[in-house]
Length: 188
Figure 1 (cartoon, helix red, strand yellow):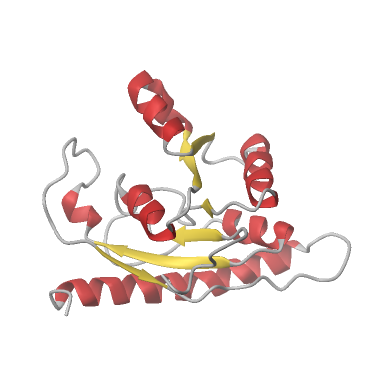
Figure 2: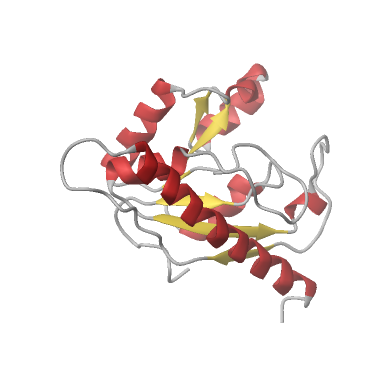
């Protein structure tokens, strides 16, 4: 946890294998975090209320949801940490791939670091479609903060954002691999 900034804004960028991942991401910060959550979670009033209380805000996945991006920018501008799942949705397996540019774009716009976080074990505990989590071991591995390459003044070229996303990918894979390896060793 010493790699996480104690004050100021940053983007926590976890691997995403389970609906429980946001809870583990929030636990490691020891600060209140806000996080993007898919719009469909609000279909169920009790779940939507829970997501609200836990700091979630709506994002329409598959689009450049301008409102959600403005909310995210305001959170960072206010000095708060923000959780963004760069994979955009839950994935299965050990490969981190096909990241979206949202975390890199927000980081570049707000000039804040992205901290990659590998979370291993949540897929087995609560895979897609599972209603009740199963007991199991979860390991979290926190990477070094990554800073965007931002030109002084003016617009941030799309190529810079894409290049930053490409820098995040192997770092996120590395922390996810480390979390999985540590979990396989029994946490020793």
